[in-house]
Image (cartoon, rainbow, N blue to C red; front, side, top):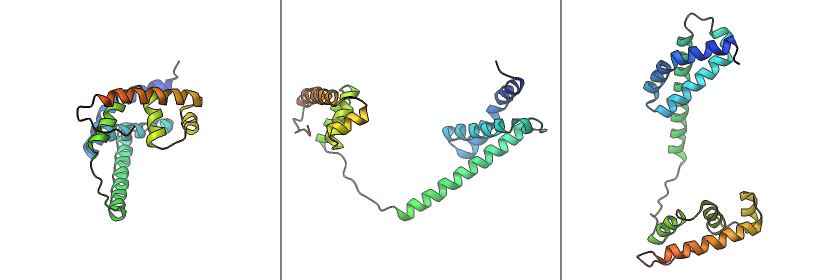
Length: 168
C-alpha cells in the first residue's frame, strides 16, 4: 500500500510527464534521450519530494532540472565527439567477403547456445574450458554444442549456391 507522498507524486508524475517529455524532446531531438533525461529529472524530484512538493510550481522545477540535464548531456557528448575527432585514427576496413557473409548467415540459423560456443571457441579463439566458464556450463556441454553446431553449419554451408569455401 502506498503512502500519501507516493500517491501525491504518482499524480504529479502522471499530470506533468507529457509536457516535461515534450520540452526535453524539443531540446534533444531524440525520443529515447528525452525519456532518459526526463526520468532522471523525476528521480531527482522524488528524492527531494518533501521540499519540491511545497514549491509553487513543482512542474517548472522538474522541467528546469530536465533542461539542465539535457544541456549537460549535450555538452558531454560534444566534448567527447571533439576528443574522438582529434584522437581517432581513421581505419579503413574492407567489407566482408562472400565466405564471411555466408558464415554469418549460417550462424544465425543455428541454436543460440551452439552459435555462442562456435563464435567464442573458433572466432574469439577461446579454449573450451574458458567458453564453459563464460557459459556457466560443463566443458562436456560446450564440446557437445561445438560438435552439433559444426555439423549444422556444415549442412547449411554445403547448401550455399556459390560453393564458397567455409571458415569452419
